[in-house]
Image (cartoon, rainbow, N blue to C red):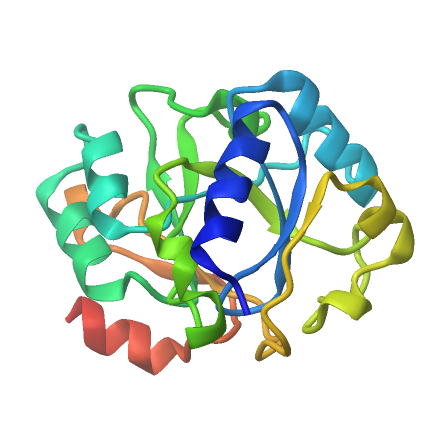
Amino acid sequence: MIEPADARTFERCMAVGGVAVFPTDTVYGLACDPANADAVARLYALKRRMPDKPAAVMFFSVDLALESLPELGRRSRTALDVLLPGAVTLLLPNPARRFPLACGPDPATLGLRVPDLPPTAQALTAVRWPVLQSSANRAGGPDPRRLQDVPEPIREGADLLLDAGELPGTPSTVVDLRRYDEEGAWSIVRHGAVDADEVAAALR
């Protein structure tokens, strides 16, 4: 169970360049400050992930995401309102080139998450710090649904471990909205926790 004090510790961990293992609405993830190059490098090294692979930026409220991305078009903002919080990762146009360390070789695209946290992790909704987020596994490895499923070297290398019990274990559905504002076009890039029909119904 995540307590309010844990959420404050999580924020402090991000502020000082730490890396945390934490619960989402899907699987356990790794988080760090998306503007701290050393922290991002540590996170990628723990995962054994290639540095040119993009990651998502996670906000813990939709309002904070919208405030932080004022350049989003009307359709995209509506999509955030209807799909988030939820177990989806949205690929959005990034004309302001925000969070470049998370974008990899394509700074014009931003991956965005706002989780619908379970009751055991609700205290994290108070976090006002966006984080670079990726699943807490070795690159290509199984997604951890329990803290003890996170590989031991990752747990030992992280600065903070937060345990919210067992999670659903299915990663987020990735929805490409990069052409949504201009053309109303969208597509599923990766099937996951949210069914494609549910996404279609929300965007309709």
